[in-house]
Length: 311
Figure 1 (cartoon, one colour):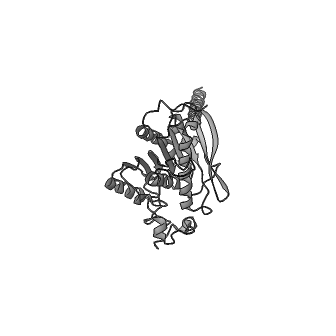
Figure 2 (cartoon, one colour):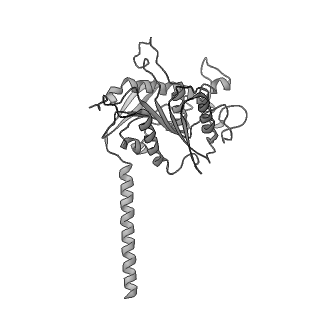
Figure 3 (cartoon, one colour):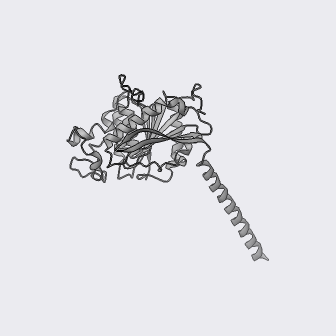
């Protein structure tokens, strides 16, 4: 009888544990699958015969603000590589996500990609009313190469060309707040990165991605400096939040630390959060995006009353 009672109690405890784990798993799944109002694709240009596009992912209860996600890893991108669950904390907070794709290197150089994402931001801003977002308050996010592209927008984004006949190109490609993971900030000083051959040249795996452009500079310094955000920080650069692991060997923490130090000299706000033991990515990154949402709440301001969701 005693053994039977023990077995029954063990079965009861196990059943409760299974139920608890099932409920937890269901809760996590539900959190990372927020209800959406719509998902649609927009075309913003063309590069080497490829259509350039971004996805407009609108939550069920939009707050009238947008965050552009640079869908880029190793400066490669794919139109089927983004899923809404990747930005669930932002969608749950009401942010409309603009997932920007580009032509992957080495077919497109990083310089060409930067030209293209500037076009994407201008296109997003030109169609802001259609997207139901405030064109004056646009955030940007990404990780690794996506973080690097985000910082290029933050430091080199600016007004459009006033005299052009293309209305998209008349729009600004500036962003108003940045929250990113482990970005490359200084291509001329890769530090202890596993990509550094210590020969004064580009990252060893990305030589073709940084190859000279027709009628452009051929010297690495003249190619790499314009694409290094650390050299273009200015007092009006938008407030930036960076999460970076201290065990990252691909993009060492030093990249973000020196960027923050330079920002302190120049003036803009750059907050760096160091993830202990974090390599080039860690398991809780998706949870950390909750703090990105807090950052955008703080620096993009309250939801604009004038921005009404598009039908």
